[in-house]
Image (tube, rainbow, N blue to C red; front, side):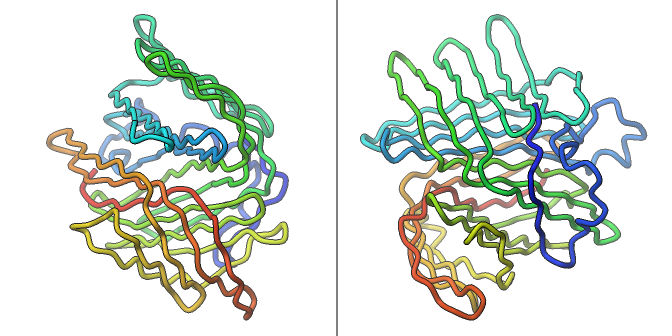
Length: 318
């Protein structure tokens, strides 16, 4: 399957004019058979999706990370009405088959299945193993945002979507969660990324608004902040500060710039440490957050509240 955006907008300096087939941006970008390896080893990609259903009291996310030499999958589920959470981490190798212009990720082994496929504005995510049974259908409702970076050394592309409608069910260890929400975010990022990098990232939304802010650190750092309001993406100042105490990550964070004055309150935290010697050593914190404050759009401040979604703190080598 693929997500093929109806409208694409981006910051003026991005290479949007070079995009001929946006649907192709959902294809797997990293090829394990690529040669020579000394050029391909820096190519990386990940597919990230998360949803928040306030009525069901559920937050969950699923991530596919792919490099020339390794592939991993992670699923995280939170019952927000209690303190329960579940997660699944697997090192896997996806099927090499790739339907052109489609989202096409699949792995199956010994009765277990992970599948994420799409066509047009629709997609489906399924998972089966001894603990989980997941069946979710996704439909794009808002315009996509595409960002390209070409800094001579690192060529990087980001496709992301907010406001996706999701319906289905998640079952885990005898517990069933029915999901019906439009607070779903998906992205596909791929390109040549420095081996050592770090970032802070925020992606939150409600039923009318969305806000995305990424601050990378290190060489060829990428920074952008965009807000979806009134049916279009609006560019905000990219220099954003994420102020927090790393010893107390569950305390409120301040997210500020000349266009932002926000407080992000973590609801849940999933700390992760990934090691695949000698290539990978990553510390990655994913937080489900609630955000409120002010945003300046086209010179006017507007109050925002009730935005929910994901925030990440990442650093390491991979």
